[in-house]
Image (cartoon, rainbow, N blue to C red):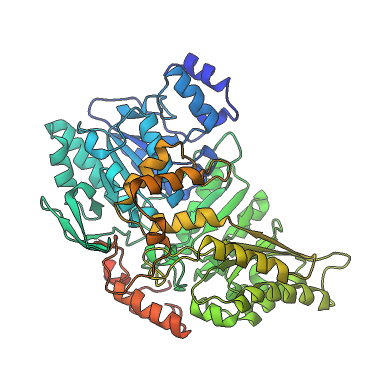
Amino acid sequence: MTLDQLDLLLSQVQKPARYTAGEMGAVVKELKPGMLRYAFCFPDLYEVGMSHLGMKILYGHANRRDDVWCERVFAPDTDMQQVMEEMGVPLFALESLDPVKEFDLIAFTLQYEMCYTEVLNMIDLAGLPIRAADRKDPFPLVVIGGPCASNPEPIADFVDLVSLGEGEEISDELFDLCIKAKKEGWDKAEILRRAAQIPGMYVPSLYTVEYNEDNTIKAMVPHDGAPEVVQKRVVTDLDKVYYPETFVVPFIEIVHDRAAVELFRGCNRGCRFCQAGFLYRPIREKSPETVAKDAKNLITSTGYDELGLTSLSTSDYCGLEPLLDNLLDWTEARHVNLSLPSLRIDNFSKELMEKIDRVRKSGLTFAPEAGTQRLRDVINKNITEEDVLKTCRTAFAGGYTAVKLYFMMGLPTETNDDIKGIADLAQKVVDLFYSMPERPKGKSVSVNISVACFVPKPYTPFEFEPQATMDELREKQKYLLSCVRSKKISVSYHDSTTSVLEAALARGDRRLCAVVEGAFRKGSRLDGWENHFKPDAWNEAFEESGVSPDFYAYRRRYYDEVMPWDHLDYGVTKSFFIREHKKAMEGTTTPSCFVGCNGCGAQRLTGGVCKCL
């Protein structure tokens, strides 16, 4: 695409800076013979994709090689897509403006099941057949990774390769394979056969699904030398792994507009609803010295005035207090705000609060997840009501007047008493504020309740559980609103329609490929956005495909059922999930991994045990 064509495109759309590139930190290379061209695609809008830390890491990681050029590609918004189609402009990469179909690898990171139709849309917009079997040429190859790759079956017919686990090492091995394939002229079948021998690389076309009469899976049968089980890749030493010294700095505001550094991967808590907490095991921490070095590099190179310390449970990082002392020595002088998402209620201290307040005070967010102790024990949250109130007392004494509390509804074994418990707990927080003589004078309190619909996910102890129906979820939402007695409490909740579809896609098998394609053909795309979501298109696609969403969303699974993802090994064993599910039904908790190893199995991936530094 020429610059004149780009100018004409951008003159007709909102937010043209989404498509211009040229940002500080963007990598532009001179094309050389034999160079591998790699389109890193995020199937959502620029503002969302540019906030994703994993994309930033892998973008820099690929571009450190002289023989690879990685460029970014984001989903165009509807106005941009309409103009592109009218002008006959195919999907293009930002850095070079070249058509994506000219690249060797087209890789998508899948963060959320509701992006599946957008993956198809971007492949189609690139001018390529959406089904992998119809793409006969050796290149481009379509690759997927990210958390949704843990069960890629609902999208398996559209992709050539699935990268399981962490991408820093496996991507180099894939690059080397593709460069050799291009040099020696391999056909696509040969490339796929050899790619299947890379540890952590799953090739869906090399597996046949056999079904039982009741539509459950009988077996996943590999052929052409593909392994029976594909095990995810993990980085063993986070102090030695690549981390970027700079980020691409966007021209427009994005969702998380800040520099970010990783503290650790994995989680020690074992909350039974949390897929990420199990997918990213085993637990591996970066040293405070490495984190501090990475942080200073990013702030210096990007000019950001906010630094996020990221992990699944930031306040569980063993070196947090000395790290904050180190960072505050220079961030305070530079007026850089420290952001600590994912704080735990049970280890939020006055000292921690004082440290994060020294630059800029913002609201506090915590996640009790359930309104009663009984249900918190079922989900293994391992916090008490007293922990919640103690933390809020500390926050109010420190000058805070606003607290946001995250909950879920539709959890296994949930009753109306548990729903009422959400409102009761919020009311106790309000009452606590007004009972404190040391509360901020002349100010009122604000407690915001945010309630998500529980979605059972693969690789969790609740993967066996049915999803609550839409009618049940809506009744629960109404009941919660009726239980709120104070104007100091506000309630927001998620749409139950998308939650049920998410549940079907999360635990689906290959029969859903026809449904995803059908929804795409009927105009579904950007389904994660309420203003784009088309439930009628999905309903018609299910009906025309002869597939029932209820079978995937509302059906209880038996322990001996073959799951669509059982041939993909993410470290934590199925026997552990069964054991944890039984304990959940008994209301029995499991302690943190830092108290003692609970035998989940993930430690075998690194040959050691999960531990704090």
